[in-house]
Length: 318
Ligand SMILES: Nc1ncnc2c1ncn2[C@@H]1O[C@H](COP(=O)(O)OP(=O)(O)O)[C@@H](O)[C@H]1O
Ligand SMILES: [Mg+2]
Image (cartoon, rainbow, N blue to C red; front, side, top):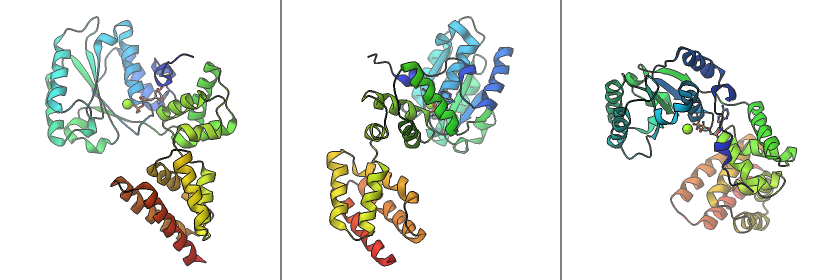
């Protein structure tokens, strides 16, 4: 079996293959036909195509010369604005090959402090004769105004379920893997519209054979909704021993971490058949125990204490 990473293999190579994000793609295509682009700012959640679109744009613009004229940097991993400026300087200094300008793609620009952003703004100005900047962020409001106003701003949309299922289908067909309908649904549920997660989970699950609901939950370190529901029902119904047994099954046999379990409970809460009031109480508890686990407390002790609280809540509503 090939060990290719599917998130790279299935990353669209041209703007025309990008799923959805039509408002972005159409504007960029018209700039490609004119042969020039302004500075650009992409905002949006993870896994909806920001990096993909930036690379596809460079490929469409520069064709075979794209790699030498495209620099990708990550603001949160480049250890400070001085390192970033140094890399930009080195890149901008070398004359572009066969193109009028080069593209510098700076991912996670909103992780820079306001002071670092000021330095970035000056750098953008200094090299704007030879380089165009594409900045990518989760929240454009975290960028200083002078940067926002120098860029054409594009907000990426959440991908619809249809979009995601179409993408999954494309991979399944191309890889000749088999997947149950419920397995595909589970991939969507677990990755919640993030196509990077979608692809990684699908790839991991497919190594176990036919993609099923169970294999998806195993590879994504998530408890099966049914297990969580049973555990909580036992606890709410006053059956502590059974609830605890279920918890041990999740942590010990299925190898989930305490935080995995808490997150799975969080995802499940509104699906449970409980009065609204009890759900709110559960939410409060989840917040508290998630915090405790983050602080490094013992997982089993904390989760048992959590179940004891759930049991109390159950008693109070009966
Ligand atoms: N709109 C999209 N169309 C096609 N593939 C996408 C799209 N969005 C994300 N992907 C896929 O998901 C993966 C991650 O996308 P990426 O562009 O890196 O996301 P981000 O928005 O976090 O930069 C890539 O492998 C890419 O193929
Ligand atoms: Mg990205």
